[in-house]
Image (cartoon, rainbow, N blue to C red):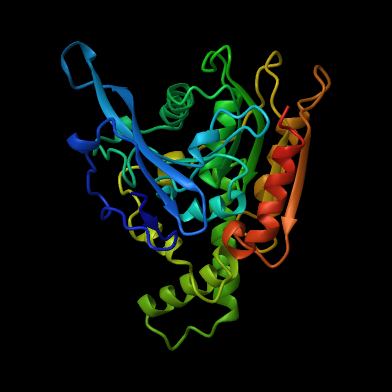
Length: 340
């Protein structure tokens, strides 16, 4: 019997709660159907980490949760699937689920929770986390699902993981090909993004009269104004985003990747066509993405990667929620012209 799911009523474990693969559904396919929407499949893949504290540096296994919309066409050669990489780090993927509504039956959409958040395992040892490990986990997901051709979309920090996967050498299966890459509000330099966010906060402080307000209340007002102006400009924050923020992981966060700077791939490594999307008022400002232009031009030794930018009017950091239709059209077009 098909189960009815509501895309806006996703319940996740509380932050820091370790989700274990249920014995009864370890290899089952949890399937259902949205009302007038696509079919879904949920399952887990196993990823490993080197445990430096174990004898002889043994491997530890963890579960990575994933959800596929339109699973019956996941291996379509005419409309290859899109793999979605969430941001944070450690912001569960459910805030991106509304993207599936843009591909009702036309294409498979694959979401997954990176290690440390959502329904995936949440080890407390900080050594289990890094950009490199996240890239290897993505490679394991692609391999486990036997994806021969697929598109890759990363939001915010997820774009860093997606880019590093696309440029990595030796991770890709011989018969696996990433057809296109979308960087959605992704900074090329994390330090710059932190500095720009601080600059925007200072702008807000100068606009507000805070002299007579207690420090904690003033900080709350600034954060609230930043959220409304530079994060999500909707009057009411969608439930999917609220749930993700309330249940974000606590072990692996932005501070752990604050030194990231995007570097060009090796000269013998080609990249798929790239679409960069950001909102007009995004805290990932124009300055935060300047480095991508240098990365994808790569100088004179090789022809640069096909790269274009789109700025979405009156949007901030969550364009897929703030202007779902136009965002969906951009992704559809980018995928369609790169399907083969």
